[in-house]
Image (cartoon, rainbow, N blue to C red):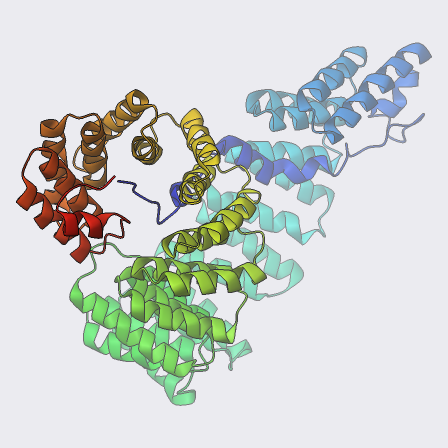
Length: 601
């Protein structure tokens, strides 16, 4: 008996790993290489500290050789050939051992090749030759030190950068960040104080100082910083919320609650304050008050729906082992959210997700359809709707809605797959084959999904009596995946029905059964092949096991009736043929078997 796919296997594909050090380094230093070498190569140099002054040290021939190697390296770097670029820059450095730009570029190439220690040595050489004048060399080396967590060395370079350019605020901020990363919050605060003294007060500096004071446990100073922000911005509720949070961290819940209550008196419809107060009650352990405030926030149409969705997903939907109380809370909040945002597609989509995760597919598709009525071009919602139809085995709607989705998303192979599945179930085999062939052309770099298409195309062409194409697609599956149990079972069954290659059919069926010994379909297929080979006692054993697993399969009941007839049990055979008819078997000879009480070929 054939067992068909309802869902493509490609949904189980996993993410590939990425080299962590490469990500870190390119994020840290990647921007530097685009800045150039920090100096131009030219016939002369004002300070005489770059390759432009080579004509004062070596012959013109050597200068020509140097420039050839150096610019070859630049071209290779721009092409992304860092190993070749490194070789060229190293050759340039051999020609002129005092060319700082060559060592700067060697360091850049080493970074791209994850050779951090070599990058450090080359960058140090560039800074040494240049005597700390070129800011790009200093920035490169400081960033390498930061990656290596050599905080003191990185801080020293930024002190040099500040000395060279005292009006550049960015360098002060970076120095403060280095102190903070090193765990030296006192020096970080001093640096932020210096920034305020030189450049004036700013929200960014104040918030950084507040965070550092809290980390030090100096809550009084943190609160002073926040109060100054409030004085400067009395209408910004975020600073009051920060003040309340800081009071909470200090252990003064009464002060925190006072701030929240004053905020709500001032603006009772401020959704962010409502959420903050809900969080306050949760932290206190008062879940009843917290949930009431959360419901108030979810019913507030002024609060962004994205905030609400984030809470639902993070705190409810994606939490493992949800109990019934959590589910009830999630449904309550979602209904409130939908009532507050009745025309928002996202509200209905998440309500659909709620039902889908709870396997309430009828309710889920109602919400997905409402979402698509509001905004019809969201592919993820269409996909979820199609999955609901498949779960409900509503193949008519699955076919109709797949057609609608294909008009919007003609490049999405999964939609073709679902359409093909629906039409196979509806016995529209020609349409199934056509849509699956079209969808197969859209599959790229996805072997699992490609195999799914092959399996269903083999099914469609078999039903169209095009056995050549059917066998071809089964062979394609098994060429790529010799252990594909679906193809092994289906191919074996269809060969046995045609009385072709019975040895091959038996071997494939046996292999599928070895991999899934309790599968009702695979038990029936193997039993049916034994029946076709005249091994009736063995056939009865396997088909009987299949019936034990699935008593209401019309096809299996017919097969069991056939075996009983061959064993001489005519009355029992007729009994099972009647069961087959009762359970929807549409075999063209079934009625004749029942009427004549014998197998009709």
